[in-house]
Image (cartoon, rainbow, N blue to C red; front, side, top):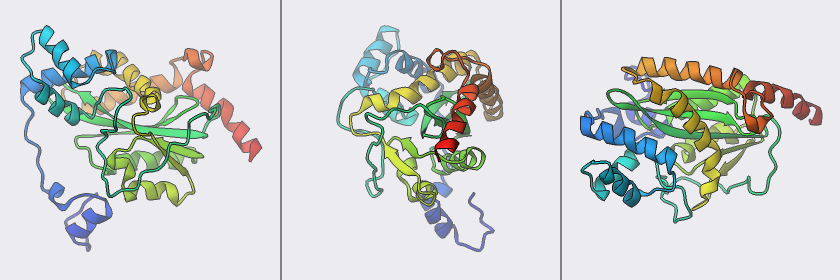
Length: 276
């Protein structure tokens, strides 16, 4: 999205996208092989025991023979964007200069397509390295409306996924995210506010707010990612795209009365049109 040939200066382009100018020149150092192995195992343990914090993960890893301390586990957890899911003071990495919106879904019954959309980011391990996956999901149907893959945690890949979902599926009444800096940035929230979409954000210590999307990440990882050691970003993109197509159109959900997300989404969509 940043172009050195553009009439706007690089500083202005970065400012409009909510990026720091220094990030334009940043080239990440290779992650040591030992850390990649640790991160892969930590990701598996986190899905199995999402309540485990840095101390418990350290203890579990040490019992398996990994020589690792709590500080290093904490560093890797931040890199992977994972944290223990339990009631605690909020530790989400957010920009304190950005506005945080209240959580709007407590006590709300969500039964129709486009009533609520949610979005989150997760870590995806590869054979050499790792990437990040973001997805826009329809809450009622579990349908993945759009997704993007990135090698960094910048805001632009989240905005791209949001714009694609809005282009192809209309818009929701409420859009829910966590308080991460990607979702509180002006460039992201303006995409919603200019369409009069109500913004909802997971509250401090409200671990249950994350469980819905965490289940989708678990399905993607256990049924696709962990079965394939992607050797390139392009291979990861192709594999995850194939799985999401299967997940949406062919994989029935017990919570949807054994319908697929695709079927449930389009079956409930006319109800909203009629109500309008």
